[in-house]
Amino acid sequence: MATFEEVRNVPNHPEVYLIDVRNADEVAKTGSIPASINIPLPDLEDALKMSEKNFQHRYKRDKPSKDSVIIFTCMSGKRAQKSTDLARSYGFKRAKTYHGSWSEWSKKQGL
Image (cartoon, rainbow, N blue to C red; front, side, top):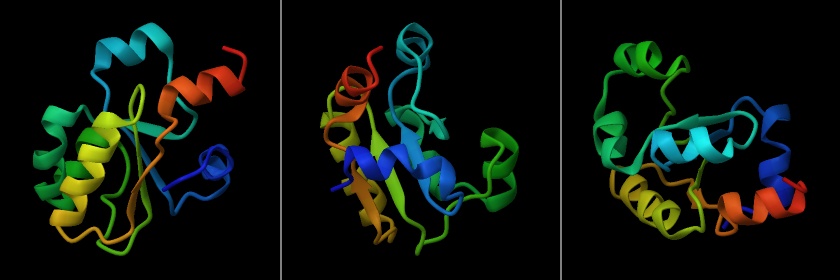
C-alpha cells in the first residue's frame, strides 16, 4: 500500500509511476495529483499490453517495466485496488494502491 507521503514525493522520483484510473471527466472536475498519468480503468488492460512505442505516444511517458513501482489512485481507492490486482496479474510485481486516493489527497492538500 502506498502512503500519502510516498505519493507526495513521486515528483522527486521519476522512476515511480502514479496512475490515476478515474475517468477523464472526473479528473477534469477535481484536478489530479502532481506527476500522475490518467489512464481510466476501462483502458488500463490495453495500456498494460501496449507496445512501448504506443504507450509513449499515447501517454507521453515510457511504459513501466515489470520491475517499476506503479502506484494506482482513483477517487476513494476501490478502482485503484482493482487496477493494482490487474497490473499484478500482468506481472507488474511492484504495483500498489494508494487507498486514500483523491479523497485523502485533496483533504490533506486543502483543496
